[in-house]
Each structure stands twice: as structure tokens, then as C-alpha cells.
Image 1 (cartoon, chains in turn yellow, purple):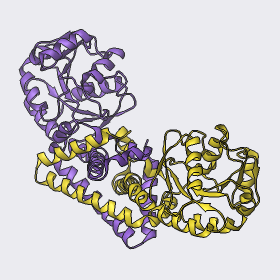
Image 2 (cartoon, chains in turn red, purple; image 1 turned 135 degrees about the horizontal axis):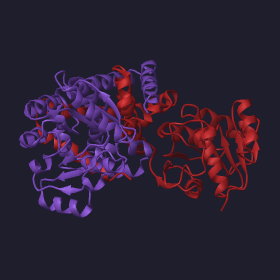
Image 3 (cartoon, chains in turn red, purple; image 1 turned 180 degrees about the vertical axis):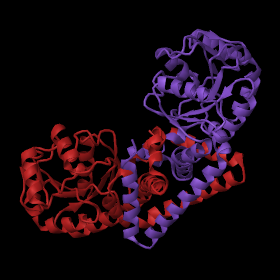
Image 4 (cartoon, chains in turn orange, green; image 1 turned 135 degrees about the vertical axis):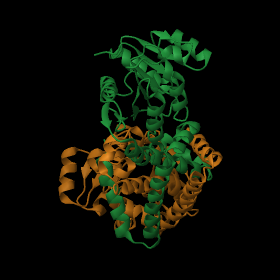
Length: 282
Length: 282
């Protein structure tokens, strides 16, 4: 059943893709958008990304069945607080942030008594950022985590689950703390691994990269991501990322020792374990 | 000008691709192939990969203008030694191995007085292995290192350079030791980084990988490579790989410390350096 009104606040790549996907899949009868900067609001009007572009976040929130807050993770709670009193009692607020512990807890707290907050994290994105890069099929077949608290309203949770399913995502409902541990490993650690590899290689002769094959290109693709965006993610998930990074460093140190010792049994066993794991990646 | 006879010994993915590319681009008038196992030789006859399939390596080498030895790096020199006395004086022998120091030196030594050896390393490959996966366009636009010694015959070097150019590769002529340092950084280190990441992630809940987006998939693609093949590469390039790996570990440790200290300036600077480097990768 389509939502009566979907409101998207501060669309970047993900928010714009939510708008496009919702319209294409008829997941909402009406899409209202708001962006902080007036020139972006004007561009959004011209691009016809939604049915209406509101002048303020509060105005956009009025009448919304579902609000998707699409800011970077360090701005989410502040914006949810700003719109809380404009929401109708049945309204549900969600987000698209890559870290969920703090946002799920604080988002719930600031809308309490006004409406409902249930966090989301679609595992979709690109090293390209900005609303102009949004696409209607960004969520197709991708995981979308939904992270209710024990105290979350079951009907609100259901609305969020149904919404992402309607957008083509495979929805996984999980506790916010567990979510943060999972993404520290499968998303944030790979980012650090790739960025540190490029950062290290930049200290050697940079022309060497011109000789590289597809291996370097693929291994480092996500190092092209936005540093400021990642600062906010690493800040919010610092403890879990540090734990994953330390585990990875131990693994690397073991492999280094095996190489130094010409312990080929351990080297091959490590590569084989890696290969087996990789073969299970979709 | 096409070669009169191109001989390919022990074709896997690369050797078969050399055969297919040479035929498609008319780089040789006649292609002779040899494989160690008789069932492979029979399959090669059926697949019509070359104009002839020889029963022995020596037989395949007779009359060759250029011999491409396509074995794993630890078997190259032995095979070159086996064919040395069957080569004509003007024959040139090359290989496709990922490490060049030892092969360039020993290959040169074992054919000396019989013919010429000039090492090659096309930066092309796949996590798929075996001659059946060969393709005619594998070298198209890819770097191919050619690694002459100071004592190499200039005409022999020219033949190898022209051959890879004819197959569509961008040829880079470089000293074997420098080659090994370059590939330790842009090829062997990324392999270790990706394999260790997968190996580490396999120690956590493996079902998490089902939730991953394109980031994990790309960052770990090469971890699907053959462990035994990589053992031989890491063995031959151990000193340079250890040096690159240690440099990477220092970079990771710095980033870990910055995260632990909430030193966001350093974190962002590292990510930004990585991004800038990545933007220069083709």
C-alpha cells in the first residue's frame, strides 16, 4: 500500500535515490523534499525529483507518513529534533546512516511523544556523491538494515520494513549494536584497508599506478570515497571499527611472520581461507 | 612483421591468451603448443588452440622464432634449461611470470650460447585460471613489462617488445629488480591485503558477507585467486613483498592510532591522500 506522503530531508545520493525509487515503484502517492541550501532547493524544483520542494524541514514534515532523513550521520539527530513537533502522531521517521547505535537511541528519544523513529541503513552507495547521481534502482537486491529498539512501536517498524522492501531492498532487521559490529567488519574495515593502501602507495613513485592491472583498481575502488563523509562514520562507530582494525592487523602480522619465516604452509592456508571466504561473497 | 613460429609452453590462462591473441592479430604464421600432461595435449588438439601440439617441450622449441614459457614462476627456469639445446641460435625465449629478478638472470644464463632470453610480465590475469579461460583480448591496453639485462641482445629485446605490442599491450621496459619492487607494491601487496581481509573476516560470523554491498565485493575480488600460484610468486619476490607489507602495516598503525586518539585531522588527511592517489588509477 503506497504511503500518502513520503518526505525526504537533505537528499544526497541516497535520498535522491529514495525519491526516484519510490516514484518509479509507486511506494508513495506524494513525495516532498527539502534541502538546506536554497540553490539546491531551486535545482530540485527544476529536476522534478519530488512533487513538492518545501522551504523548511518543518514544513516538509507536516502531513508526512514517513520521513527519510538523508543527512550525514553527525547531523541526523539534530534534524530529527528540529522537525519533531511538526510531525503527526502516526508519522514514522527513519534515516539512511551507516552507523546506528547512537542514532537509533537518540532518534527514538527526540521524537518520543510526537511520532516514531526507526533507524535504517541501506547497504547501497557509490564513491559518487550528491543527489544528481541518484538512481531509481540503487536499492534493488541490496541489503537494507532496519534497526528497531525493543521499545519501538511494532506498527512503525512494519512501515519501515515494508517501505524498503517496496524499493527493492532485502530487509534485515537487527539490533543497532549488532548492526554497528557487522558494518564495522564488512563495510568500514574494507574502507580503511583500501584507503590506507592508497595512502601508503602515494608515498612511493606514483607513476607505478599507471602499470597496474584490474587487481589494484578493484581493491582500491572505495578509496575514492568522500573523506569527510567517512570521518563522520568512523567517529560514530569508532569502538567497533578499532576492534575490527586491530583484528585485521593481527592477521596481517601473522601473514608477515609466515612470509619472513618462509612458513609456506601458513601462507597457503591463509590465502586458501581467504579464497574460501571470498567465494561465498555474492 | 609476423613471427615464423611462436611456441607456447605449458599454457594456462596467460599462455592460451597469448595463442589466441597471436592468431587473431596475425602476430605469428604458425603457433606450436606443448603441455606437460598428455590429456591436456589431447584437449589442446581438440580445441585447435595452435597449429600444432608437440609431444615434448624440446620438439615444440625446434624452429621457434619466439618461445613463451607460461609455467608458474617456480618452474620457468627448469623448463628453459630443458629446451635450451633444441633452440636455433636466433631464437628468443620469454616468459609471463610475475617476478623477474631470478628468472631474468637464470633464464639468460641457461640459454646463453644457444639462444636469447628476455623476461616478460603482462599485467593481465584473472582469478580464473587454466587455458580454457584464455581470451584473445586479455592483453589489450594492459601493461606488459619487459625486463632485459644490460647484457641482453638488443635485437632479442626488440622482438619481445614488438610481440607484446602486436598483442595489444602497452610495453614498459624496466630493469628486473625495479620491476620486482614495482609489482610488490601495485600487485603483490594488494593481493595480500585482500586475502588477509577475507581470512580475517572468515574468523567472524561468515553470514555477514551476505549483507555486504559492492565495497566488500570489489575490495576482496582478487582474494579468489589460486593460493598455490601466489605461494610461488610470494616466494620469488619475498624480500620486496615484505618491505611493501611492512610499509603498509606502518600506515595502518598510524591510522589506528589517529582513530584511537580521535585525531580527525590525521584520519581525514589519510583518507584524502588515499582518494587523491585512487583518482589517478586508470
